[in-house]
Length: 276
Picture 1: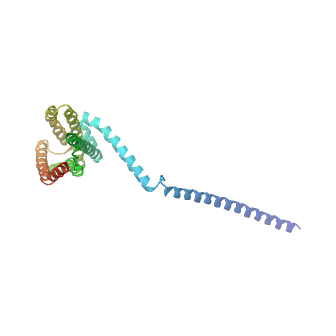
Picture 2 (picture 1 turned 120 degrees about the vertical axis):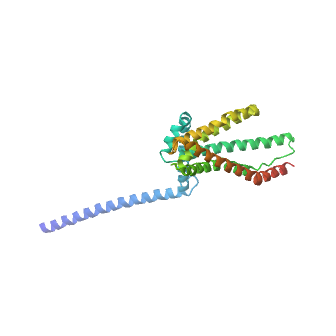
Picture 3 (picture 1 turned 30 degrees about the vertical axis):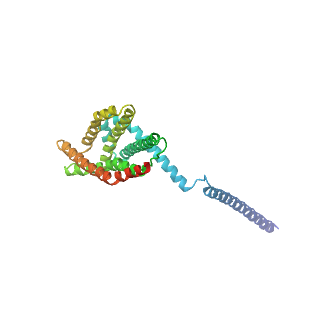
């Protein structure tokens, strides 16, 4: 009887362990089921408007990067205006051209806004002078493209030319550093444009006089930043900078000449055709 009781006890113990294992399996199955339900809900949300898709996540990351970059750019304007040479040298020491690119891009955006506003004002002026009889269809796309070439394109091209000419004079620098130098100058270019536009609302004669008086500061700031950021014999720096600016002036003239001969004539013809 004792042997039978012992066997019954062992069987009861095994049944109890099996019951525990079944309970654990049930809990695991229940957790897996809940996880599957959550995954299914998330999957359904991803396919619905407003769901958190991969595209939305990418857009959110890009938005955060743009906001962060914009804040960083604006935080650099004050220090560069106060100490253009030392601050540009400090920025360039990191080896990154992010600040310079952002400043050049900001200048381009301001120039584009001014050009678009000027075109809209010209179109409205033509419309009002003709008492509503003439609608001037402005070639916005062509003029925006020309503005991009003469701002963004010219600035990055100048950074490359400065790097090449510096190397030709046995100097040491890199393209990122030159982009930061051009970016520092872009701040002054932007302020000069805004001053010119504001004064132009009052008097174009005064605006042109003030622009002619203030324009050299942009060149001086660029030269000061340049000589502070390149490793070269001090006596060679003015000549290297002069040669680079001379090459840039010739290239800019050729670009403007080509644009005038190819694009501007067609743009004027399209404007005149739309008017008459």
